[in-house]
Amino acid sequence: MTDPLAPLLALPGVTAAVDSARDAVFQVHRHRVNLRGWATTAAEASVRAARASAALDGGATAIPEDGAVTDPVLAGALRVAEALGVVLPTWQRAPLQALARLHLLAGADLGGELGRPRPAPGVAERLDLLAQLVTGGTSAPGPLVVAVVHGELMSLAPFDKANGVVARAASRLASIATGLDPKSLGVPEVMCLRRQNDYAAALHGFSTGDPEGIGRWITFWCEALEAGAREARSIADAAAG
Image (cartoon, rainbow, N blue to C red; front, side, top):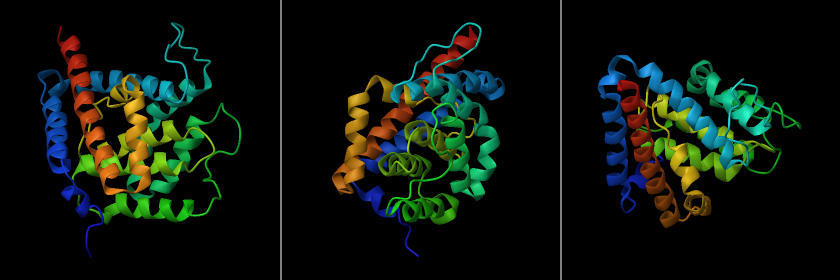
């Protein structure tokens, strides 16, 4: 069978962007601090990613000194970030169950029905296709798979709320599962926050299904992965003193 993501590599600029992103993430794993002390970088990256993801969904970014987070969006994003390691095995075998778990965590303080996709036409079918894709349905390189996971979940908005936090968390799971960022050191969410208009425009391009728009989203996300690798390097540099 033809790999469903293979044609995307032929879009202008995509292969070069994918290769550049993959190399940037690989290099940050080779940082001398991350060879043994990677857990420190990963912990800080997780918090920065959660804060940026919450802000993108309209939440707060500040964590009180006593750790008592009252903003519901930020609290959900932090819960999701903390649970990724536990959810990862479920993502690898049953991604729809993993998405439901992420939504329960992200939306716990937001009210409404949690863990169940909207009963809108096409939602269940597209989620099933995405699940097939991430459980062996493609051999495409990691950055491309992650871009598609992120873009599809954002475009589909399968839940009534907290879709952004869930989609960005799923993209982190996909980064780990594909081997792109196995230790989850990168923080691409920071660039998305700094360039919110570009982020939204690129996602809109993906949602149209037009090849030019899809290519624009993939190259944007690859740029975010490179920026996230620079963020990870700065964390490691600080840890090195």
